[in-house]
Image (cartoon, rainbow, N blue to C red; front, side, top):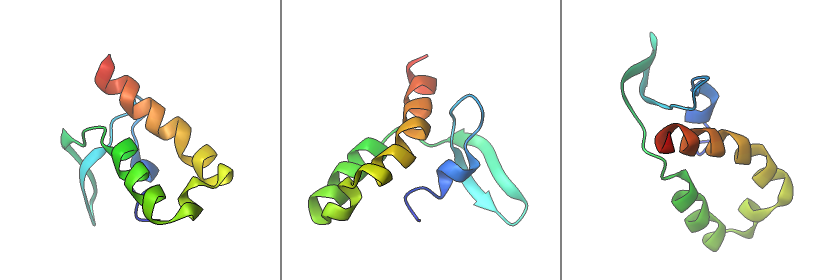
Length: 71
């Protein structure tokens, strides 16, 4: 849940907010695309993160974030 939390607030263009407050997302900055690195580290420690249904759930949001940074 903590891994996908910011993806729940992802902008249409793929950006992730830098900060979430009681008033909502702060778009002054944005998160860099390190989620692939983080997911790989979590998979190395817990094979449940490699389950196909988990990977399908995060693939598109992660891909949109990377496309935002590449574009």
